Picture (cartoon, helix red, strand yellow):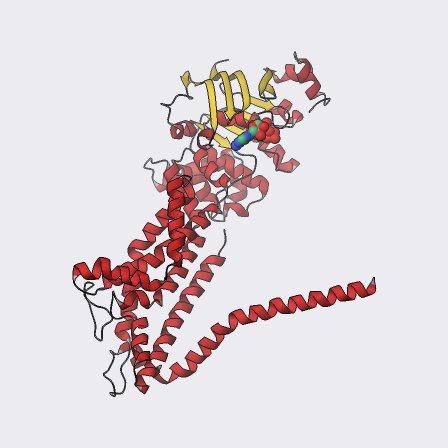
Length: 278
Length: 253
Ligand SMILES: Nc1ncnc2c1ncn2[C@@H]1O[C@H](COP(=O)(O)OP(=O)(O)OP(=O)(O)O)[C@@H](O)[C@H]1O
Ligand SMILES: [Mg+2]
């Protein structure tokens, strides 16, 4: 009896240690990346980084201000039409989606989630850049939408499915129409989950580089027109990182740090909304 | 007594499974009717027919007529949305809307019913409904608290207030007290008696004392059939069907 229980306890401890080690392995990269970035990016992390345009090689100073604004513009542009489309599609799947068409939509969304992002960039190029005969913020946003929408469609659907059936029944029994029940009561009940999904998808597209390479292209200057090539932080980081110049490398690190800080901020906001209950 | 609801030959099926068989029943205006019977005999199915709650259940089918003020609500031409504004419902489990305050829970039916109402008139109706549901004094100082933060009994009265706010004529209640303690149950019973002055109430209950206390008539269901319906005084003292007698004396079900 006693030896058995001793062995069982020992095994129990071993397994627990194994789980714990794996958990550490999972979070380790985040810390390594973050501290590495802080150390290497610190050199260039000064106000000019955030407010200046890029300077030519060799000229000291300069920043990524146009990239920061460009990233914000492209992200907002993407979300402007992707959020309503994706949320309404998620509602369709959760509330009406019983038939073959709905299964097809679900399958397509799942497949899209797995498609490498560079393919979205190529499609943006073929569908928008070639016909419009120019690289543009529009094309960048279109490529990012293809990443954003499927993710938000599925999280919206999942969140709506967690709303108990009695909530629907209570609303219908009050003589509220089906679409109003869904839009004003069911969606509201699931709103914090849906919002969390939107924010996490937003953090994801913020740092996407490949879809922008052939669409938004990047720009060394300010760009106020949406039908012209526009700068974005990931593109700048990419350009700086593959350049042979030491000071550009430092800027690449700093740019990456800015990007990860933005992502972290969004993730924290998402956590805040995700935790809020009732 | 004048009938407000006349059920004529109602039968219902879930898929191939027949749940109600040829139900015939008259419900008098401003009366309280209790529906009793063993578990699974079709009580919930029956009262959910009265406000067409089954419309969205795949595979559900029903035949026969249900006349509300002489109009057959089973007809395709009847809009279930309008019907449900006239025939309200309270469920077995208290189910306030999550993420809504006490006030919003009562107001939401009014706000989403498409009529243009001023804030003041909404607030007035909310207060009136909470008074009628005997909840006003307990919640008047924290109308902005989440509805789900109330106790179970208060939540159920909140659900009653919510149903009353859209001013129905008939109130259906499916075992409204079965999730509640005796004190809350007594409050709801009292409430039903008060409400019956202005509303027609159909209530499903498993509790015979409760049925005897609150109802004018009692309907006894068994295996999807209406075995007997009579004045509550008569059915508990001198039922005409042997099966009713067996049920109420506890020899059965
Ligand atoms: N949505 C549904 N789909 C299929 N069958 C159902 C459905 N709802 C109820 N039934 C069946 O209909 C029959 C009657 O159910 P109902 O809920 O009306 O009984 P009840 O008298 O209300 O019972 P209880 O006292 O336990 O609430 C049962 O056999 C049940 O299995
Ligand atoms: Mg029932």
